[in-house]
Image (cartoon, rainbow, N blue to C red; front, side):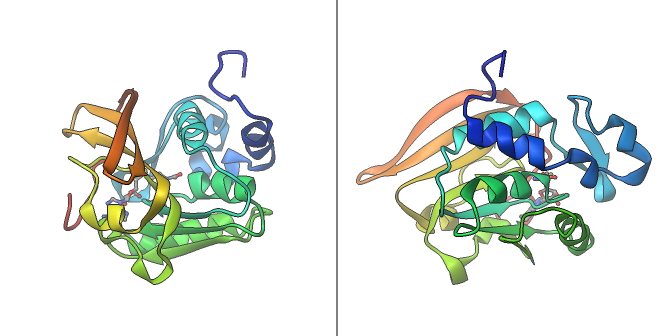
Amino acid sequence: MREGIIQSSAVLEAFKSIDRAWFVPEGLREEAYFDVPLLIPGGQTISQPTTVAIMTEALKLEYGMKILEVGAGTGYQAAIIGKIIGPKGRVFTIEYDSELAKLARENLSKTPVSNVEVMVGDGGLGYPQEALYDRIILTCAAADFPPPLLGQLKPKGVILAPLGSRFQQWLIRGTKTKSGIARENLGGFLFVPLRGRYG
Ligand code: SAH
């Protein structure tokens, strides 16, 4: 908050009530509160808390929203979002790796949040069963927003993703307008790559 990264009390409350230690591998519990990304099974990473905070604020979440996340990983980002949008909101998070999806479900069961559903699949294709979404977030990097996701976004909805090449990405916030997607660049980041059809 002092550094202006966490800006809203809703995001602060979510970080207070969702313990990152529930989501990091057992051998790394002591590192859970360091502001660094950590390795999780399958060669993937749980993002550093600052990155989760920046992305969460950038989504401009509101109570009761319907959210799609691509890249459940440990489930940490999804839990933070689930807490903020409250019991009337819903988070659908897709994970490519079925073992990680299982892990995310186990981790989420330790939290007070019960509005997050974890699915296995290629998140680049979205999850049309529950579309349209108020917000779509990718926690893995793509060359551009996968077209199916843009089709599953509500008018005026926001899509957030690290876009670029394997070793350099910009966090781009797209807002759906009548004429297309208005883009804002929120700065440089490094994420693991999107896999599947649009990877
Ligand atoms: N949000 C996670 C961090 C995710 S790391 C957390 O809070 O812990 C990125 C994740 O994206 C990895 O778990 C990776 O397996 C997943 N991923 C990569 N390509 C994907 C795809 N096409 N569909 C769904 N998940 C994908």
